Structure formats: C-alpha cells, structure tokens
Image (cartoon, rainbow, N blue to C red):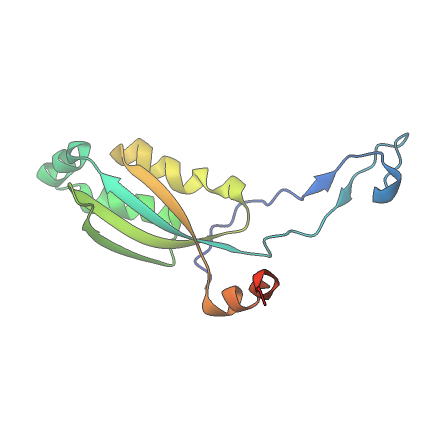
Length: 139
C-alpha cells in the first residue's frame, strides 16, 4: 500500500509554436513533456505547532483525533513528533507526484493547528549517485 498522496497530476505541457518543438503555431496543440523530476518527489517536512490551538485540543482531549484526521489526509511515509526548539513539532517524510500537491500537506496543518511548515527535498543515496555530479569534477 502506497503512502503517497494521490491527487490528479497535471501533465507538463508546452504551448510554443516554435519549429524546434514540433508544435504547430496555427494549431496551438500541446505536447506532454518528460517530467524532469521523475515520478516521485520526496520531501522532509518540518512542522512547528504553536502553543495554541494545540494546548486547547490537549485540554479538551481531542488532540489525538485532530492529529489522526490530518495525518489521514496527508498520508506521510513516516512521522516523528519532537520538539521544534521552542515548542511542539514533528518531522515527516512525504512523497508527492508534483509540486501542486504540496498545499494538500501544508493546508491541513495550518488550518487545524496554525502550524508552520517547512520543506526540504530528500534524495536516496541511489538518486544522488545517478544525479550526474561527475560533470562538476575538476581535473
């Protein structure tokens, strides 16, 4: 079972009428392009929860339910709760098919918890090895 968000992925399109694209200026047809990011983007998401409304949810006994609803919508690959240096926090790994899905992670956290959300692109060792870093080598 995949933990990736499953929202419709808009195709990458080009609407240029230039001769080198193979697109007719008169017809204005669109051609799908290869996705430069591949099929999946992984992000490390850092979340900071301010004292309110989280403390109120804890006092009411609804914090677990609220977190469960939000995580059910986000479907992180993994999540750990920790301190953010100044209060409650969390770190999670998510996979998305396109950057247009990022708001579907951010908004539930912000709207339910007034959380701050920060993203870092994540790569597995094999992805880094296949990135073509050798072209930056100086001899």
